[in-house]
Image (cartoon, rainbow, N blue to C red; front, side):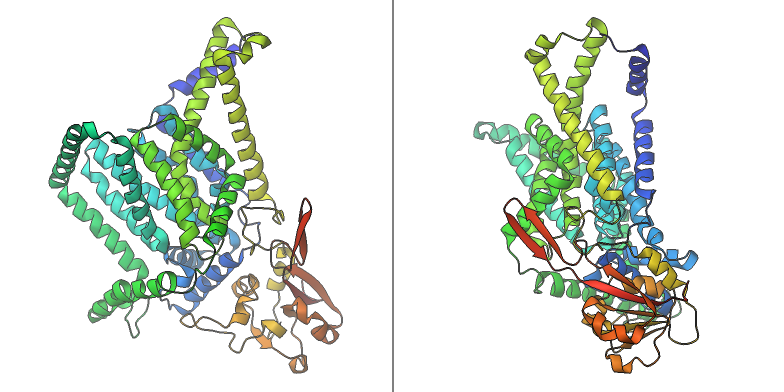
Length: 580
């Protein structure tokens, strides 16, 4: 049986197409995958709190670095967007989706180290991996950080391989953006340095080759030194770009005790205070919280097991393909990326403050390189068999289990598993709302129900006086808590609801005790635990119970003979029947 000529003809055209054009098609598809239905999912707690503070920044024009909400880049970009368009879930996720959709283009920067098939496979992994897709549709800094770090690495490889120093400003810009995106950007060069050491050690293990290896090392160092000597203006320009991006993004925004970058032209004397805030205060705050603070008192084996489970459940295709690539290829880039990926899995088990599935992003972008090599080898095996089939026809069944056909069958099986897992897991988990309860990709603070229809009605409220009352356990003393002083813990118990209420511009009050709720506003929101206390005062109001956690309230998980119950927290929204 021979394949139809239309199929073979199309395959021939694809094989002859320019690799840049094919990567462009992959990038376009990646953007579509990330933009479709982008604003439908209910905001995660982290999305909601950072979006809320970004909105408050726009309202007050005051901003100062706070390490608890990570690097400032997404906040600044979101603030610019909020100035020109209505703040919505789609808008806050849009920058992340665009960066994640463009990420596959980075594959073109390493085409001097990978062949054509491997470059295309790398672009496809970066475009389709389910974890990268899910968190490429999520208002959080991990995908942008991974993208900028990979861009910096790819541009550096391009500069060295092509001896073109003009790439160093790209490296500097990408490095500056990475540092402005999230603090764990500093872990990337640490992982890269370790991976380089291991790669060199594995590439040159024989003692009797010491003289040859030393000679190669000297030649390599001489080449790098010569490249730096001839291209030093571009290297300096790249460093200046990196520093400039960091200063601009981390600097306070308005005049005050530390000065503000927006007032720099009117008050040049504030430059010293601005640089002090960026180069001294920001690193000090970062170290106090993330390095010497108490945010990481956890079991490393437990976190490591969780990280591996996320990779297997969410990115099985990438993991399987990376295993094939790492086992079958010893090129320096493949070894380097494999070590980098494994180090990231272990490193984040030590450095993480919470068990967060989004941390897998930083291992996946590394494993994408050996995964691309593995996919290329598997597809080459299948392709060879297809080419033979077009000439001699497919063999009979008994012959398929011997020799080259046995390996072809295994390659087909692996590619099928990878494709099915990627399509099913990515398709279901990235687009299903609310999230499935058993979902290793989604973090627990992802709401278990979609309250958007109710919240849309809440947003339509317009009366003289207070429009929303936060009651019981959600009440706080100051509803307009400043950005420089984090609100009390009760405010965090409301998440993600404050984002939806604040963006609607509703007037809000707090009432801790039912006796103080004399004249209820059109909307009253409180924890489910306080429902019975306030319900008698709200006779005639519609009641909506909203699960603030993905697993609902409560939910029992059963695995074989074992079971455990998670006590999820819910919010109650009372709404006057005349609203909407």
